[in-house]
Length: 88
Image 1 (spheres, rainbow, N blue to C red):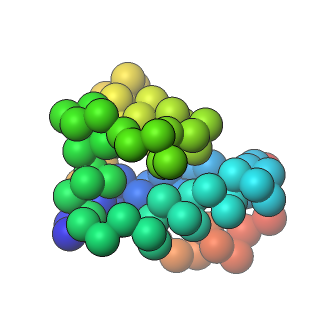
Image 2: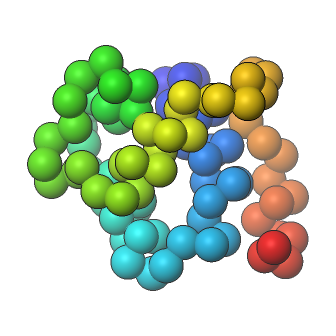
């Protein structure tokens, strides 16, 4: 689903490098366990409540990211070069 690809890849670019191992595990679980990609999107955009098993600090970070308070243009996934950059 394009919406999730954009949302999750930009979120990953901004956040993965500074997440703890536990947060990375929760993020991995979030993006791999729900069987419906729309669920993740609805939870992130607060269109539907997040089930307790996924309502973690990582989900809170994703919900905040999805609000896009800085009104950034988020029209495409980031280039993958960021994966090879040194953490900030």
